[in-house]
Every structure is written in structure tokens, then in C-alpha cells.
Length: 168
Image 1: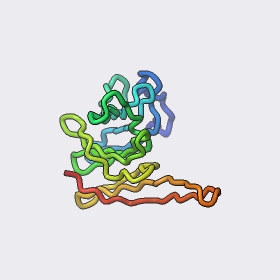
Image 2: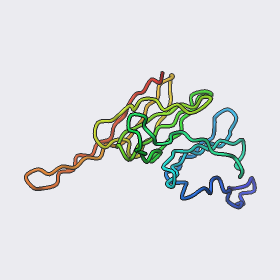
Image 3: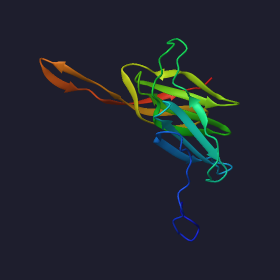
């Protein structure tokens, strides 16, 4: 943290539960200027969210995505890698990668977080995800990583995608 006098303050411990804090994205909520941080918790494989009017310790993080898919009981995905927080008025969205499935995912914050169906699942997608909101639509950029063998030689076919998502 940097004070008004441009002095560096002591860091704030946001979450010390296990091996956590990977792939963090930090934003200010546009109206209240509250601090929002989304990050991956390596220990639990969960995607977490911190929101506070000021940067302070002791705030219980919310879980955006547990990584548990009801259609695949017993399996837990690494979720929340390559994430971005976006605000649309008072609504908070998180765009992120499910690294286990190689999918791009979207979640909306309400009374609790709701994971919306994956907007992109074709191949290994969702890398380096970022997003903006304009006119009620989310535009998410992300990379598709792809390599194949052609006549015994590796051929790399990585592409950058822009998805327009209209959340329900």
C-alpha cells in the first residue's frame, strides 16, 4: 500500500489459509471504491473473492467457485486461474479459467456466487482471461492454446479470442 504521502505501508494479510493467492486480480469498485480481489486457492482448489471498503485484514473471503461439478461427483477442478473481476453497476462478475477442464468460466455475485454456464469450452481455452463490460454486455478476451503434430513436427496453433457474453 502507498499512503497519500507516497510512503509504502506494511502489506495486509488478506488470506493465510493454506497455499493461496495465485492468479490474483485486483480492482476498485467504481462507485464505493471498495477493494476487490479475486484469486485461486491452491490448497482447496477454490476460486475466492475479497471485498472490503478498505484494505484490511480479518475480512472473510467469499468462495466464487468450489471446483466441484455436480455432473462429475468426486472430481474437483482447479478453478480461478487467469481471472478478471468486472463490474456492471452494482453487479460483480468474474471471468476465469477452469484449468482442469481447459474452459473459460463466468460467475455472477448475488446473495451468493452463481457460476454461469461456460461461455467457451472448445479446446484448451480461458488462458490469460480478461474482460470489460459495456452496454450490459461482457467482452472477454482469452487465449486458446493448441499444438499438434503434423508429419512428425510440432505445429503450434495458439489463438486469441474475444467472446461477447450477455449474462442471464
